Image (tube, rainbow, N blue to C red):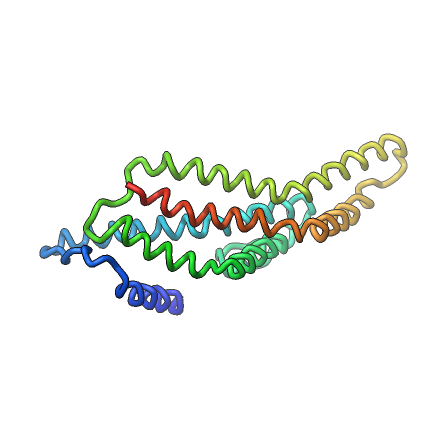
Length: 220
């Protein structure tokens, strides 16, 4: 937490030199100053929510895959979100982090914060009150993208379930439950390895859409 606060102050200090000169003076009275602080905190929380939404959506894709594989029974602590998560959740989050760094995502982040000072300057008009009309369609698309990313593994497991159901009907004496658990895990891992080279493009599109939402939310 201390490192995060120090990094935030460092970024603010660096961007202070390139901020627009028409930011305006600080309010003279304490009430107006507090309102200005609340406004800036709200804009910062909104931008942080949108930036982290891509990672949360990819974590949701990992949760869907882990639930289909039966791996959600064993969860570990995720330091990124501060909540318990399965192995597949953390795998997708780490994959997203690698794609984010390979695409110079840190530059996107800094440019986005700098652009937010231009779109929502200090003392100027804030986000439109109708921002939910812009935010809901974007978040809906991100959740659909997460489902598409998890679809290959989930589709394979659904076909495996259908096949095991047919086997159970043909050979009732076979313990399909005992055979199905390891079979589903191996099929899911095999599908995940085969489709792993194809995940870079969808993950990159999710990240780009998430950061493009900054301009969508802050535009007047």
